[in-house]
Every structure is written in structure tokens, then in C-alpha cells.
Length: 112
Image (cartoon, rainbow, N blue to C red):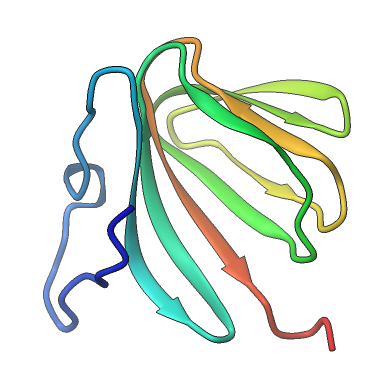
């Protein structure tokens, strides 16, 4: 995982920030602060993230392809341009039935 933030005060084409790597999930940090972070991710077909539960809401937006996001046992298929908020404290996982890219935003404030 690359934890280096993107260069500030420079335009970026979000979908081009990250490339696909065969048999991998790739994560690139866009912005990382103590109050939250924004990351862009690419998933090769058949890859995914294992089930997890986090203490914060997570905003997930598909920027290329289609993703299966499972929240508390309910499966949803999201396509390019669609987004969803994964609620805090709910088990969730992400599956790639084909290649896709997404942005994930976590804001940690407001949970004190």
C-alpha cells in the first residue's frame, strides 16, 4: 500500500491515479489526516477485501467498472458513477466480479 499523498494544488484525473495489477487489490492514498482519509483503489477480477467492521461511516464511489458491496449480509451491485455509504459498525466486504476502481472516503470526526 502506498501511503504517499497526491501532490496538492495540482489537477488529477482520478481514474488515472491508479492502475490495475493482475491478481491484486491496489490502494493509493489521496489524502490522509487524523480526522479521516481518502483513497483510490483498483481491484482485479476475482479479488476483494475480506469482511470487516469499522467504527466510522465510509463513503464508497465506483469510478470505473462494477463492484459488489455486501453490507450486513445484503449484496448490492454498484456501477460507474454510483456510490454508497457503508454504515459504521456494520460488517461489510467488497468483491470484484470484474475489474473496477473506486474512491473510499472515511471521516473520523463526529464520533467522539
